[in-house]
Length: 268
Image (tube, rainbow, N blue to C red; front, side, top):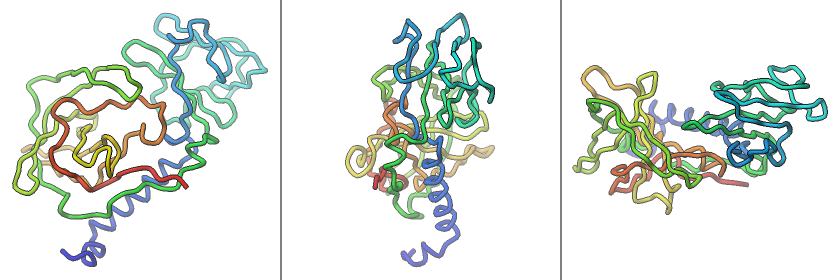
């Protein structure tokens, strides 16, 4: 297919809408660029987090936040003077329970450890951001794949972007063919049935970020699935250093180049 024909196709226009939507979402006031810190409470046993107002303590199965009016904190949009118990925030960042003006302070729990994330729309990363460098749609990289679930879910320990090792759940594999050779990626299954892979390829760390995400749709009843590398995603840690993205599990580094999808963040 010629380049002109590709750019006139419905697939190209759908990809272009997706790409433009991604840029808007990333640059949103509380998008990934606004994360200025992930503060593990175990690193602050006295409860004081530098540059974060309030006193944050872990108690049993929750985090207890104590604040004075001078801290300027709100919980559920009401000023906090005293203390409140908090669980992990699971909704959109801008809907988190704790705020200070435009800032959102998000409670996080991972493997029994608690943290507070600080999202600030005035973060240097968000102010510097210009766009996402991505390869325009190429039908060559929209592939037929097959999903094969494991007999039972597996958990592997992988290094995360913050240097700590954590468990990564895997539910099966997708296989697909590139230039006549079969390749396999291990994937997790999301609650809605869609798939998620963390992978690297021979472009990683060179012409693209060091690893990327792929989110194929839910397979059909026969395991057929569209493996569209045109929609390869940069992980959140490509936009802010304070995310704890998992690195690819063993076996998820492809031996081919995947010059498709999102490649890198571009700052102005």
